[in-house]
Length: 420
Image (cartoon, rainbow, N blue to C red; front, side, top):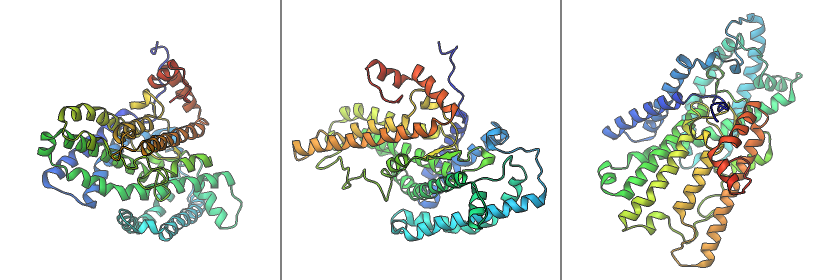
């Protein structure tokens, strides 16, 4: 049946994520052997998975030749024309960076905890970015099919000339996403790296619970490393540019509610589902066989969650459209990361159990975790509304309704879930 109804082609080949995994695994083994912990070693992990993906994408998949990049390599615009567009774009781009920098400076949370490392790292990159942006824009503007992009509209707006309002809005939304989430990802890389490097292999081999937490830490590192690569390498020559950022307020509210400083889903937060609770490791302590049986689905779910990020290759990003992914776990459901993450929380938190045996606390925890799952369902629907403007996504969504394992399972249960 599926032979006559093939799955729509993915914007990213499965090999991209695979070579990134090989690079990340290689560096992790070296660092583990020589105990190379610390923030810089963590950032090296990001490079270790990012560089192979860039090389594969350019040398093998030749993504820079795709029409979707907006680049025509046969073009050689006159330098006079390029100087006008590039100078205007520099005004818009540098002003955008300055606005993001001001946001970082004003936000007190950016100078606490893991964000401190991210701020110093990004501040150190500013001179390099300023220097490289000039030759880069002069080079690429000669080859762009339409050089009058969001940065150009922003530059014209700032210099008091006529500009395309919708293009400017898209530029501001895209850079708001990139500025907000890049800082967040850079802030959590060192912590995830340390969490993995602190695990001892002999202890993991001897204790199933230690093995479970070690493997889960590894999956989280994979997710964080690939996501960081995605936010940093938002570039047209890699066909990884932001096509559009979510224009709907509901999409932004539902997404930002899951991240600091706006996060509502955290211990002690508005939506705290762990009041008087304890996770699975506390309840199963002292039962090795039960621990072994219980940890398997938790590891599988975390693996699916990480795999969903790996499938994006160089293109992972919240609140944006950077090409439609249809392979990996996206052949089963449109939202494998959200589904796996929420199932993991329900299994690991065990909200129906409380250490004080309070029915009230248990009821509240179940309701609050239900709210969390509802937020992620809301996020999924707003993403579908955004991506639905692309005919490629509509074709994928229609195929998923016909063949997706999860949507068909829900359909057999008589549930309408928006094509999860």
